[in-house]
Image (cartoon, rainbow, N blue to C red; front, side, top):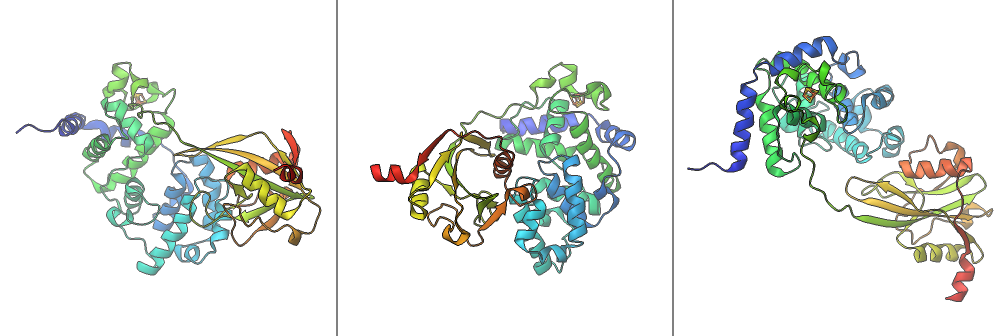
Length: 390
Ligand code: SF4
């Protein structure tokens, strides 16, 4: 019977892996001498601390994570303390770390661990992977570092190392490519469980410090002698580029309602983009924004600022801030009822506090630019005047 092509690819890479029995040994040896040591979460096998660090390290560099990790552990010493925290407090502590869905999942996961696992993280990666925010690779990392499980990790850095070292041409983002990489990663694991933490840390360290996306330091690499990409001088060809997809663009119009040195912020719904964070009211169209402003004041002047962009993983946001000034009392300017995002919990935030509030990055940048006076208006328009013309 003929085997499918994808299975042949997997088998070929596994065969190459078994032909490289020194892969794990060289990585372990290198990690012992050159890997990263002394990181705060490396001093413990407490699953709470390891889980916290691994969630923060998803798509974020070590240097950025360290102060956040330390603040979280100081404020919430264990999973029970975190599970009992208010969502707003967790979001505020996470503010600036980005990818805020991680913070929402963090709290949800802590609450499940307390409610369903008596406050103890399950040790097996297969169970961990079912909890909010913990994918297969993160689950494996937690299980390896806390209980020496023989489970492979496979994040972006590891895919890059494996693709280059074994010359894997498959697209790591395709379903068959993904299966191929997991099978390869599994075939490389050291036999002894006690070697798993050092090996896994070595893979992480090599991907982050030597086999980097651009300008890898092949001359310092412990895997150079058997690296297909290095030998064939094709390092830049691996991993195979993701097939180009058109990124959808979403447009929004932001109302920046200013009173003295403050701006009106509203609490966004718990789910969706920037869920649970404070942001300026957002409208899908310019007309909707102007209509909301007119409902609050017939004479307010709307000043449009230059359009800005913010890239999300799956779409690009194009937003135009519109500044409206008022000196009237706060209660005379409620959050616009027809804002696309209005929730209970609206506040006036002093621009001086923009650095510390739980704000999405583009909102924070906008408010800081406003505070520092580094913005130039595009064109002022009177909301009332345009209303009378219509
Ligand atoms: S030799 Fe270069 S390309 Fe190959 S694994 Fe090492 S750093 Fe990466």
